Image 1 (cartoon, rainbow, N blue to C red):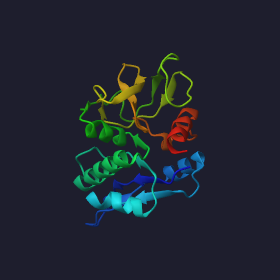
Image 2: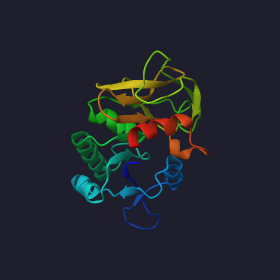
Image 3: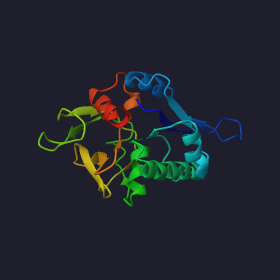
Image 4: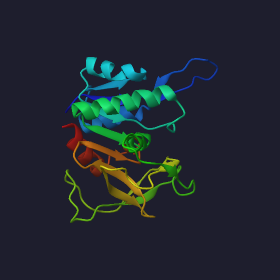
Length: 209
C-alpha cells in the first residue's frame, strides 16, 4: 500500500482562542481495515506549504477528508487546493470524502448547490452504482447500497473531466472518478460505517495499492 496522507478539519476549542486541526478517530479503524497499518500521515493545514510537508513525510497518496463546508476556513481551503494541485502534478492517487469530493469538483471548475436537508443531512439513503455495461477501473458489483449522508451541498453536474459512477434515488451524482487520473470522490463517509463496505474497500485498493 502507498503511504497515505489525510487532511485535517478545523476544530475550534471550547473556551480557548486557539485554532486546532483534528481528525475523527473513525479513520484509524478505517485505515486498519484497508491494511494500511501505520502507513499513513496526518497533514496539518499549513497553507501553500502543505505539499512540501507531505513530501517530506514520504506521502504517496492523498485523502481529502470531510467536515466543514468549503469557505468556512480559508487556511484549510488553501491547504487542500495546494495539495490537490500537487497530487495532480505528481500523479498521486486521491480520494475525496464528502467535502473532499466537493473540493475536487470546485478545483476542476464545477459548481455546488444546496442539498435538501430532509433528504441528505443526517439521513441514510440508497445509491445506485453504474450498470454492468459501464466499466469502472476497479472491480465492483453493480447494485444498490445504503450509505450515510451528512452533506449540505451536492453536485448539480460533475465538472469535466470527472465522470459520475453512483447516483442517489433522485438521480443526483454521489460519486465521481477522473477520466484519466487516479482521482475519485464519494459523498458518503466510508470511515463512519460500523463495518467497511466491500465497495469502499475495492475503490481504496484500486487507488492506494
